[in-house]
Every structure is written in C-alpha cells, then in structure tokens.
Length: 257
Image 1 (cartoon, rainbow, N blue to C red):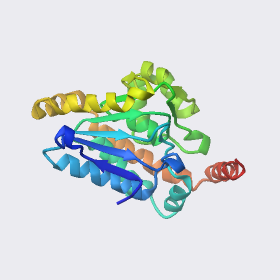
Image 2 (cartoon, rainbow, N blue to C red):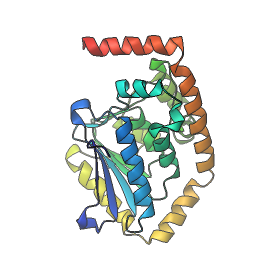
Image 3 (spheres, helix red, strand yellow):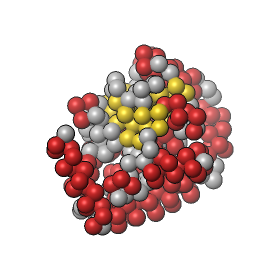
C-alpha cells in the first residue's frame, strides 16, 4: 500500500462510489511503483465488490498528476520489461476494468495523467487544467493504448499533435477533441465529478454494465494487445542511446530548476 494514494468509499454514497485520489502534492502527485500497485489493488477490489459501482480518480488542488516519478521510474525500468511490473499492470487494469470510471482533473495532467482518460467513461476538468504527453521529447513513445485510442477518439492529426509532437491541450481543447467530457470551474470540479459518479451508481447495475460493455465492445482485446506492444517498444527505447541522452538532459534541467 502507498500513503500517496488515498482510497475511500464515502458513506454518503453507500459505499457505491470508490474514490482513488493521488495524494503526493509536494511532488505534483508524481507516481511511484508503490502508488501504481495500490491503484491496481483498489481497482481489483472495487471490481470484485458488488457494493462498488463506480471508480473515481481525483488529484489535489491544482494538480491531477505530473505522471511518472522519473527517478523511481528509471530505477525500475533499468531492471526489467515495463509491461511486467506495476506500471504495466495498472495500464491493463485501465483497459480491463469492469465498472465505470469517472475522473476530475484540476491542473497538471502529464503522461499517464492524460492517457488514462482514453479509458475513463467521464472526465471533468477545470479551466486551468493542461493535458500533455512529452513521450517523444524523452525519446520514448505513447503508452496506455493511446496510440490506438488516440486517433480513434480525437482523429489522427490531433492525436499526432498530442502524442507525437507533445503539444499541450487546454481543458477546452481536450473537451473539443473528445478526450474529456466537460469543463467546470475549479470550485465545482470535485462536487460535479462525484455527483456524476453517484448518478451512475444509482442506475440499475446490470443494465449499466451491459450498456458500457456494448459501447466498448471490440476495444478491449485490441487495446490490451496494443498496450503490450507499446510496453515492449517502450522497454527497447529506454535502453537506446537517444533515450539516455534525453533523460540525462531532462534530469540536468530538473537539478538546475
């Protein structure tokens, strides 16, 4: 378990809404292996519990997540294939989750903080939110099945702009592109997100599951296969001279900042 992920099932929703909250604000909610492991456990437990009807992802004020903790990620990545560890398990959990996922984004949503919304059923975001995937800048490549889902959701050119060029999208641009559902004020974000989750939780659960499965049919097998392909290529890229040079430059910029 990780103290940096808070998992709650508020009594006011009868335990039907499971909140998974990034809670490492001093590091912009950057994700470690322990945090990924906690989230996988929470998703698995929530899916297995009939009381839980919807998962909700939230961050802290001004920051959803800055993506991977780079030092933790590099320490892990050196020792093995990405897809076999906690990161890979989390990506597959997003693709295979049985119950609806709702997210509320306020502020930075970098890397997986952006690509996970291709798997969410509803995402709300505040106007100050920014969605960015600087994979290629680090000589890496898109993950979480985003190379498949991105063009399908956003169209090829928008997906290329975000996932290959690394251009950031504002909340309004992300909404227009279909990555998120709605832009709401910072003050109303969490309440709006939880109200939407509670509304989903109030629906007949079997009918909701069937409807969701129909909407996502044909996607899951392809997405898991693409996640595995991306992970294998990601691992190869990490050992490349190009990636080593990009990461060294990135770490130097962080030290001098």
